[in-house]
Length: 287
Image (cartoon, rainbow, N blue to C red; front, top):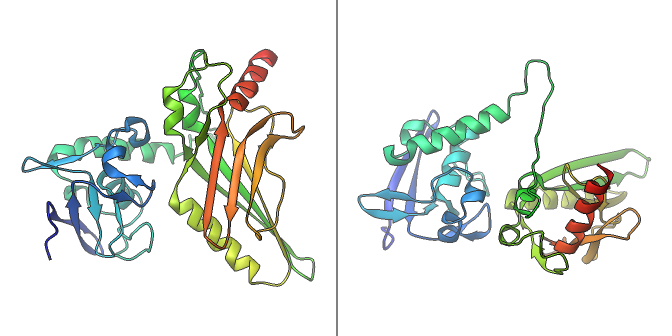
């Protein structure tokens, strides 16, 4: 059945095809935000087209047969890099999508973004990986690119067998891009946008371990090349739900908070601008 204001686009791959509905707007299952708003967020899309224009109609959203929807360029990149299964429920054929499925008007931009992803995934011949991080002296917007939220999950079985799982995901702080380091005394807190695949992976691992005999704990940390001190929550049990401070080892600098609710399947995090400034100024003083 046709959806109002939509059109069908068939995407092809080596293991089969996927028919998706292109819509003017919808919810992106990866970034948990409206696709039309994401289309205006050039930094998050990082070179991907914000919208696709076909027959003079503008589309930002692709809905799959499983009814999960995503920003159309984000979904296309996922299909090209990984396979053609839904990023959330994994329904669909395996195998990476053919580039010829991408409309000509946006193909060059998507192909360039794909090449950048592939280049980053290949280490140099000598095995050395170099990462340059530049933060302008007046603003914090460059901080976001290398910011990562990491969770360490530990489990000890009754026979004292121990397992540790290390899960890392990128975080996005859209509000941070509009603020400057000159706001020295700002107490603004910014919510972190976490990828749903990261949250789902953490919850799946936790629920699997809590069904086993033994003790389970987890600890979140916020990592960035410019943070010279570890920034982490205390170690805590998966239940009950709670909110935990992201702070330095001394506890003198609180960078933000993580709220974890295993029953609801939710992870929420926020960072404080004043805490970021304290760490950056400390790093600058010791340089």
